[in-house]
Length: 196
Image 1 (cartoon, rainbow, N blue to C red):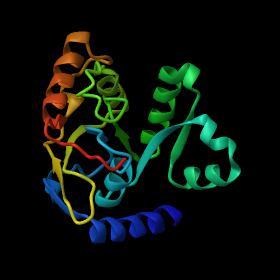
Image 2 (image 1 turned 135 degrees about the horizontal axis):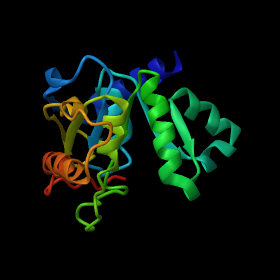
Image 3 (image 1 turned 120 degrees about the vertical axis):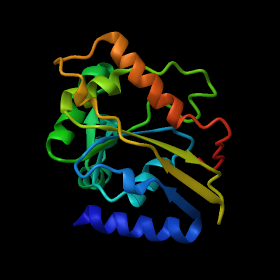
Image 4 (image 1 turned 30 degrees about the vertical axis):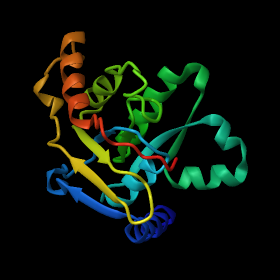
């Protein structure tokens, strides 16, 4: 209930405040998936959550849950606490838990805003995660500046079905190949969102 209300409120706001154009919505899978997007602003997560029909879960540092007020809202928005000291292990376990519940997962592989322009190395862990969970990867690119009535383009690419790889675990080479494909689809060289 809370998630639906929050989603509706944010959807109303972004539709009024920005000029949002979304292409490729028809490509979205019927079930849950791992959505992989470029990251240009703090607006990216709520924008994705509002504009996509599925329910998402996401990872948040456990310190945010120490505040009871903040924890109340985060839990109802399907946020999962992760200990930053054991981030890799914790993130994988939390993500798989969310995917098993039927939620989709938002991942920003850059790890920080404008990571591509900062030369951040993109790792292939999210590919193995999706393969292990048995869900497709949906590459999404966000373009535009988050300013009043500015045009924000959300471009959805064809889902990548990892079930073609029958092995229990992908080889490093396979994971890298899929990762490179995803990165080429989500990388937006001219996308600069200054409102963060």
